[in-house]
Picture 1 (tube, one colour):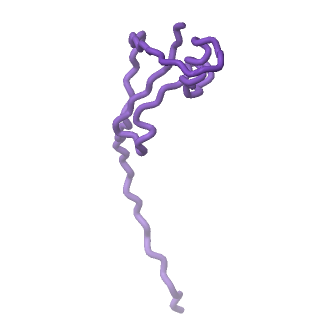
Picture 2: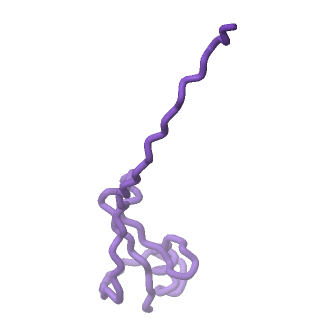
Picture 3: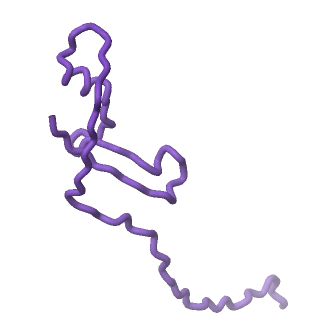
Length: 88
């Protein structure tokens, strides 16, 4: 059984659980390895001693874009004072 997943690694993520995420590329759901292994065994009732081999092959790598700082120049605004009272 061969499955494809998207692994996202972000060591700078705000929360620990967002640092390493494995998702299905089509549904974006997280894989349920218990169900996948049960399907491989045949869903027959019983207790099994199993060996699971994980082979990882990187098919494509896209780096995480870092936020960029932009320099914004603001032109100075001249405000003329308004007379608070009119003198007659």
